[in-house]
Image 1 (tube, helix red, strand yellow):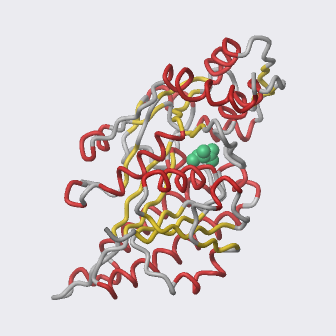
Image 2 (cartoon, rainbow, N blue to C red; image 1 turned 90 degrees about the vertical axis):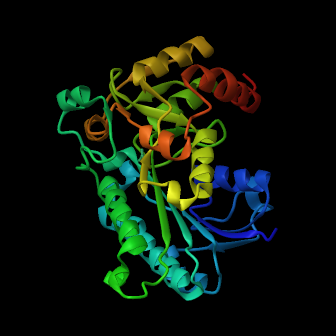
Length: 337
Ligand code: SER
């Protein structure tokens, strides 16, 4: 079997590193990585080639490759994007637009759809206030799509751009012989937690930060209230979902955007779990109004029944399994606690 030619942008990020490792474990891929930073040692040998630099400036270079699959993970996350809004827009939207154009061109040229996998986010939602958030409960993909953040606006718009390039590009779907268009598939991720890496610049970061601090015996001051609730997921489940959605035959998909969920937890429940696992952990709550506002605008949980139905999505880790079978064993190995 010939290897699949794959591009992973944002390869040095949390999802990027875990995805490159996931593909290396599976085998059958030739992976080109791209990122602003050099590759970390942990995945260097798994990348056939690494393109270092700003994606928007480097885009011409990628026309030399014929990728079967593009995982476009590079992004400026929600908290960072609020303090550098223009820059975030450039990274989150321009970069995506350039890669979509590339994938559209190649799909048409070789009459074979390039698969374009896009990590969207719970940030695409926007609840007016905490009352609405509580009332809404688990939200469906089409509801409450009124993001409050630059990052959320970027993600929602890029979902739409992906659908445009995948279905209507230039209105040529109406031509007598419509061109082959790219195959766009997006997952709206909850907050992700890895035992191996830490996020940077996001707003769901308090979850992983709290756990990593506690595991190292460091005090942590949480920037949201104890009662703040959103959904989270173990990184291995996020990677599983990306690979599953890549593999599913297109005719089984009734949508191009899918929620996925695993467990929803309050920051206070995180604290309790951390305190139980690491007695003596010092965790305090000092909400930052702006970051609090961002998380208050995100849903408590999401309805992932569409993904469950269309491509048999199911997380491996519920909250207990997450702690007992993934996070705690791995983190204890890492920090020796
Ligand atoms: N984890 C991301 C953030 O906090 C949301 O997709 O920005």
